[in-house]
Image (tube, rainbow, N blue to C red; front, side):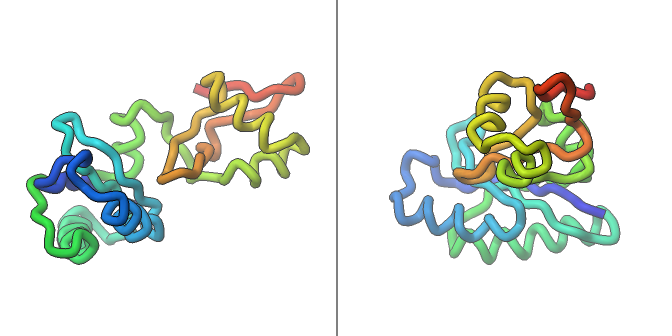
Length: 150
């Protein structure tokens, strides 16, 4: 089962140097992760990992995030199922994610057309680092444009 972990660092995102931001963003990328600003302005890391259950997911997330932050202090950690995380994040439940290029190839349209649908809000997507990903199973193509399934 997939779980999503969110952790806040003690440092504000604005206090991190560009090299630190790049390093953290690169470190979480293999875990479908991203670096964002928390509601309190702190650096917030979000990663997705597979585990047999919540206790294992908490242990894995804690160890992984401690390693990824390179000595910086974590001040919070939240772990929930990936499906629950998507629900509370305002994204529809999905069967995974596709890249913009994959969606464009499936639909025989340009990447720019897919990005335009994302910008218009008619295609459920999230930004992971600098890359857009599109929710699988939450989209359909009708009459030459994407339609929301939710």
